[in-house]
Image 1 (spheres, rainbow, N blue to C red):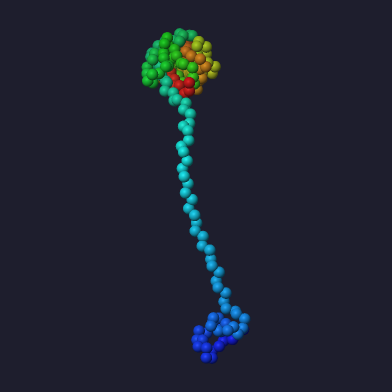
Image 2 (image 1 turned 90 degrees about the horizontal axis):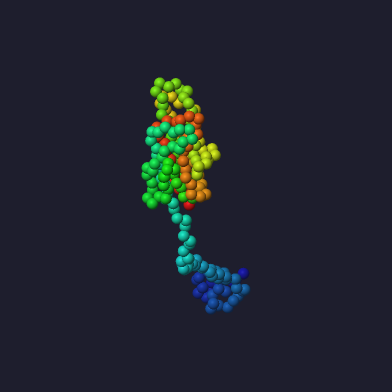
Length: 197
């Protein structure tokens, strides 16, 4: 324990004698150890340098703007006969054409809507001779693609269907009366829109 010298040493600080550098140590120094210095770290700000622009990617697949609408008016179509269709409108520079009642498609995949209306018979009961029209490609029926109506009355009837169709080669589409009797149409139509080449 340090000896405090309050006599004739003018030590009015109250500190132990051994802490006064001008005095002799009278005991083992026990002065408070100096507080260790703290290291202060400053967060570094990383700056990134932008690299050069990469090469341009490949050209995407060009879009397709190819479609047409064909329509037919009042007509009587005999058994096995082809529905008369004529070009009505088309997209600019369309390669879809209508010739000889057939919609001519370049090879590709298409969204196709086809339909027809049948004239009613005045005063007729609900049971009238059924009718059906089938979609043909290059002279052959497309399996499962038939409009069929079994009953209708004086107001007539209409049927329509939309399909996704892929033409592996250039294809002529037609509507054919596959009923067992003549069909009196009030209208007919076919719309094609090419999706891919």
